[in-house]
Image (cartoon, rainbow, N blue to C red; front, side, top):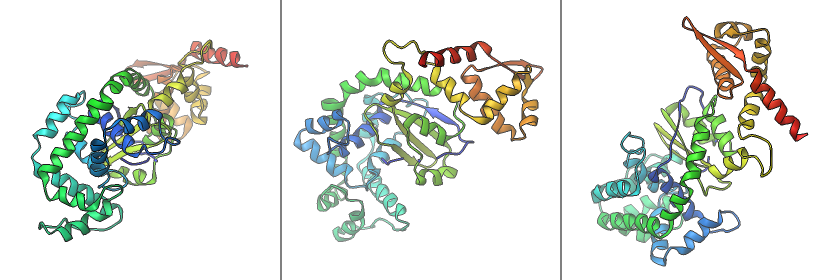
Length: 358
C-alpha cells in the first residue's frame, strides 16, 4: 500500500467499496500505526488490541515486502475484486478464496511482491530456483521493513506455514478488531461513495485531488498510460494520509470519507444546503464561466459551443458534463443533438446561499 499523485482524462473512473478492498487498506494502516501523533486514534488502539502473536504476525507478514506492503496487495489482487461476482464480496467470500489457494501460491505471491520491490529500484532479478537459505536471504533482504529476515526466509521455504500464518492474521484482525468497526462505518463510506459518483471529474488527477486533498504521486502519474481501470474507494480511518494500489492494468485510489463528509455537510444550524459545494466547483473554472456567459443569449447546441470556444470537443464535453451534473445547465436532446441552456433557478439558489454567508 503506497502513498499517493495526477491523471489522464481518457480513463474512466469507477467507485467501489467492499470488505476485501477496505480490509486491505485497514490492515496496511494498522501495520503503520505506531505513532499516535500521526495516525487516527482507532488505528493505534486497534494495533494495541491485537494479541502479541497476531501483532508479531502483522509485522512479519506485512513487514517483509517493502515499504508499500506489496504482499497484502498480492492477496487482494489474487481475489480479482472487480469481477461482477466479487464487487460486493463479504469477508466469508474473501477468506474462502484465500483458503482455497494452495501453499505454493503464497510462496509465489511473496516472491512477486519482492520482484516489485526490485522493479521500483530499477533492478531486474529472478527469485532463487533452489531452497538455498543464503540465496533466499539475499533475495528477501531488500523487502524487510519490520520483520526478522531469518524468520521470513523460514516462512518462504515452508509455504504451508506462510499460508497458515497469513490466513490466521487476517481472520484474527477481522474478528478481533475490524468486523464491528467496518459495519459501523459502512453507511458513511457508502454515503461518500454516492457523493463521489454524483460528481463529474475531468481527470483522475482532479478526482483524487478533490476527494483526498492530495496530488497524485509522480509514480502513479507516470504509470497511467499502462492503467486500464481506476477504482476510487472510501476509507474511514485514512486521516491525512494518501493511499493507492498500483497494479497495472488496475489502479486503486483511496480517499478519506470523513474528509468529504466534513467538506460537504453544512454546519449545524446553517441554512446552507449540502449541494452548494458541487455548484461552486462547477463555477470555479474560467472556461465553464465562458460557457454560461454564452448561454445568456439563449440555448446552444454542443457544436456551437465548441466553435465559439475554439477548444477540443472532448474538453467542451467534460465542462458541459460538470455543469450538467451540478444542475447549472439543462440539456434538451433533439434530432441527435444536445441543446444546452442556463438553469436560472439553480444559479439564483447558489447566489442566495452565498449571500447568507455575508
